[in-house]
Length: 447
Image 1: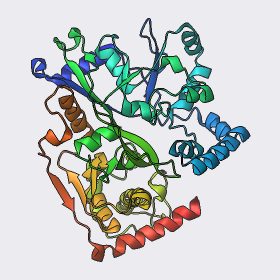
Image 2: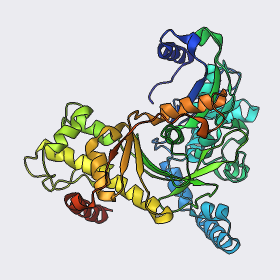
Image 3: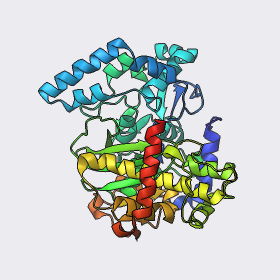
């Protein structure tokens, strides 16, 4: 995000979204990208910097220095031994955790060390931190509330998902401003009323979730063992684990799925591939296709990639390009890489929780029949796509409905969703399986 989003911009967006029918709005639900944050002045509401997203790399050296620290490595070894002896999932998670630039704590530490006014405001007690949800709530309510929900708080890595509360230990280790953290509430809690100037009426904000969790609710992925793929900025695979908190592994991490009023927390395990849909944007900007909408037809116009591969689905380069490559072969290579990376996410979660009975997919790239049909063949699992692919929007709506009492629980929500199924077909998986094996060998050689 290269520019600041001002309160005036938010007012305009809200009015446009209402379509002149403000009086019919019963409540507002919010679903936002997790891990993107702002800091601002409590007194003036002035933001100290632009949005800092999970893709920001300015803290990369700080992450490397921390992970390679002798003290950190020794401490993680001790934690792992103690956790193994006493059976503490909490200790094992801490021992296995590796700091990345996608984590909030090190990016926030970078802010504290590189934006002088941040440290000054912290010292005076006037610094506020917030992920996108809490900043939006603060603006919508005219600065009267400063709140986040459990899913966004836990995703920062600064909130204790076991015992609850912002973790003072993390604040000490990473030098983050403990007192600058917002209040945390249930996903379907009441967060305040919008100020009247925005819509002409005051509307309650009653449902808040991170985007991945909201998309799970929106697609009715609510039972333990339910599995979902989200094709957004990242490709993420998630499985509901109920009351069980998954220990941090190399590729799978624990997250909070949701916390509803009067109910216990529900957890999930997550595996992720960064820079997922960026490949589609790159296909357009590089001139391979005129628009994202035509990638499916272009990829399906040829029967193979002719030996071209797009390693990892996260790099803007090909392997095996001939002198005069056919753009259709290149586009097919991009889509196949998307299939293969999704397959690896499925496998990483299946290693812990067994093969899924079905995979529900949503997000922008889930509109691709090529990707979903080939994923079904390769994984030998039925893949379903809801006819309403923006699951995060649906999840925010349903959470707001729970918040204002339209429904008491998930079970009360009418099941009106319609899904298109891409059936498993192990007999027809030969070509895509061969391509996957070749792609895997190339990735291993390049890693």
